[in-house]
Amino acid sequence: MSDSDRTFARRMRVRFVGAPAAAGIALVGVASALGASGAGADFPAFLSALTGGWALAFAVVNALDDVAGGRAWLIHLGLGALAVAVLVSIDPLLRSLADLPAALRGPLSAAALAIPPACGWVLLTLLGRVTDRTQRTAARRAATMPHLTWGDDPAYPRLTVLAARMTTGRLSALILGAVVTGGAAIVVLLVAGERWVTRLAPLLLILVLGIVVALPLSALVRAVVRVHRVQLSLGWKHGALDVQMSDPRALGAEPPDTRTLPLSALVAFVWRDGGDTARVELHTAHRHEVFLVGMLRQDGGASSELPALTATMNRALENAGLVRSERRGVVRFRRPDHATAEPKESTAPTRPGGDARSDRG
Image (cartoon, rainbow, N blue to C red):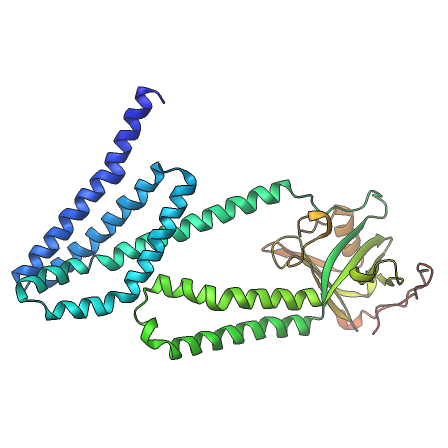
């Protein structure tokens, strides 16, 4: 490191560590002095302690930037655990100050008001550090993942993915059930643990509920989705979709469930290529199917993102009488008056051992 770099680093430490620490100590001292002065200084003491506590935590967190990556993480995690312990026990601590002589009770009570903002800032920055690292790790992993692509034949493109086959009703029931269960669990926890909940800062309460309720519920939803996993092979033909489904655990042991779906039979077609809700929806007058891709891991470590529809595919759907719209990454094709769109029987041959099926049923 050159002399100019050392000088710059020293200036940054003074500006973002030394100055905030000095200001925090001074403000907490002012709060203590105002607390000792008695009546008429409650609000100034509170404001000084609040600002001073934040400034001290700001200086401590910034000081971690000079620590090597691994040790910085350990120290920040230790500070976070200490902050949680202090926040949980702060109520009895404040009550214990009432037994002290008046000369000590006022200054210490005022200074203690700096504890919640300091602990809150430590936890907030720890959450930001974890989120940032998670996002950067996910971005690096996504950049190295192979992506799902259409087949090599441009005339008859085909996509093979692992997807959860669900009806729209079943998917809606799963989402509604997760929301209701999560809400009920939060209410039970808040009522049963009222004594502890009232001691937690709002940010810490959200973090605890996320760990205790949201994470297990998310794992349960993904487990339910995996139960309905199929290998979906979607092929585009002239004026039709070739849909093949098979059990990924018994590939080759039995022929796939094959049917040809004329585009004229579709009343709606939905395609979302990214996110946990990446999916394909096929809706006819008699069948409504959702193939959820985003929540399943793909073979070969491929990303669970669908390739974009090609211009030819968009044009074929529009030529079949469907109207295209797009909103927030979801491409929808709908038939203006689907009451008149009757599904047609398929006459296309299937693989040996498979039955030709229409979209009925």
